[in-house]
Length: 347
Ligand SMILES: [Ca+2]
Image 1 (tube, rainbow, N blue to C red):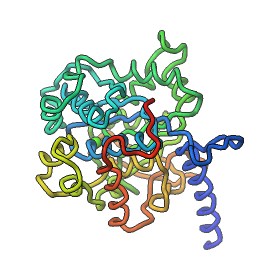
Image 2 (image 1 turned 120 degrees about the vertical axis):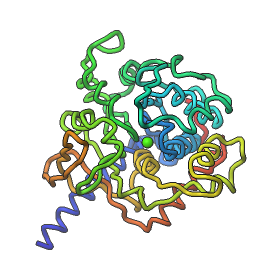
Image 3 (image 1 turned 90 degrees about the vertical axis):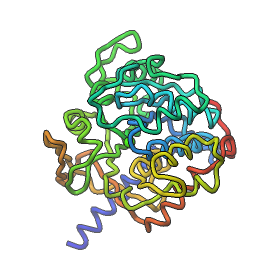
Image 4 (image 1 turned 135 degrees about the vertical axis):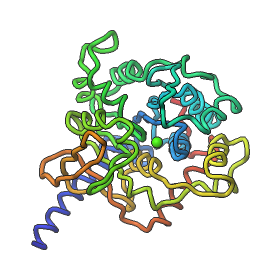
């Protein structure tokens, strides 16, 4: 039993290493670029403006791009508020990454029934420099997904989804168009390496991002053709970050402003989306590891169960370091000043 367990762990470790190597864009073996690994090509899909950890995750991605760890190909918003896209652009603009393309689920539309309405997003959109100003000025997320995926090397793109999975389900269902002759599912299979999804709770639970669109989450779980690694509710729920923004970044930082509106000056917030984004770019780094493979099932109400299944390509993250230690690592990225990265990339 113990031996079998150990063997299983060994296999998981191999998978984890492979995933991590792919996630950090292992350099070509012939290249002298050992110190210059290729940045991860990443698309960030967020319900920006609901909870504030989306803003923290956006800050981390900008800092990691400044440091050459990631090339953010696009950011997509999945909640129906017109302020999400310009609010996100305000953060990117603060980091001088305002050229990152942004797409939106139903650009320009505010859903009066939306229970994940903008709070800080509207303030950022109106009070911090950005050139989006209103989501009616950005493309539809699925169109932007297809446009960008079609141009990427095969099996190269990592998607970090930290809100509802509506855009991903719509991408799978999309048809051939002027961007690509492939169907949505074919395009994903050809271009995407894997997805890291903040969502669900393991081994079972009832989590917010899944409840936002249970049908989309079930579609992704059942039909998405690449590996999906879930960062469940339990991972970020006990890792607190954000407080250092108030003491180590200036008031002109829109991320600090977002946290001040959401949690109040000097306070922390849980790090659900931030752990997912960290793993999507840098891998586990001794702080996280993927579980054994399995199948996640979502009920119509969004509740989920997990069934360990050899050969499956769904995983969930497990924490392998103390929460406080992880929080310190995450927060260093969140407070890194714009353009202070060691390997500045303008791509
Ligand atoms: Ca979120």
